[in-house]
Image (tube, rainbow, N blue to C red):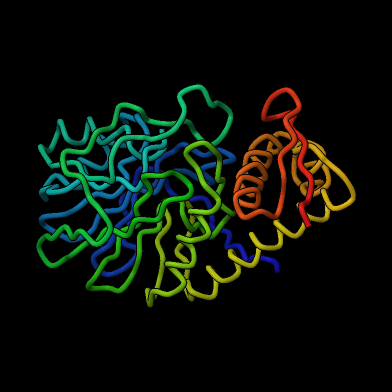
Length: 298
């Protein structure tokens, strides 16, 4: 099943713009193959506000945000997860505002893994730890944490209770599927978290990268179908004998640029970890994870 991705025109960088009643966004000039046009910093409320995902260390972006909010007070800094394009600027924003930082916790992944996403922020430690269902309240707004592990183990979405919308971080994006890379990323957790969102009744998603997502439940169902189709493709690749991840990627992702094959391979590995745990595939050690072979068990 294909996913109906949504393109967005290149934004005006460094400008805080209204995107919904009580919600504004400033896009950081950090475009890449993983961030699309850049990191969208969201401001919730007016007067006394919350900032979601202050982004990477870009002094010009933080300065622009502070200038736009010079007559307002930042009371909370919320982090969806600890990748370098989301959380590092929390430190300088906090230094300027004194606001409390909040998130699920520090990064849980491997320092040695490179070449996937924008890299991990191992320095972030929230002042306040949030768990599933915890609420942060401000003047006219409530943000409730929704734990959605998968992309990272510490990924949180934030429900804007009054508007029935969801700040979906990198868990659900309209412009692309999400990279799920072990050891911290888990496809099993990711698909469970997608199913969790499908059961909700949010009216709209605001991802950190890209345009808002309307009809989000239908979109999430398409993402789940896409992931199940990937598993069917993997089974096709290994049904006639053992195959390596590079061989599967070459077959399954023949239509994408080669520079994205490594990231695609990490997602295939995450699918295989899930399928092995479910008894649908078997790993054959062959000199290291990247050289291992896999075969179907059926």
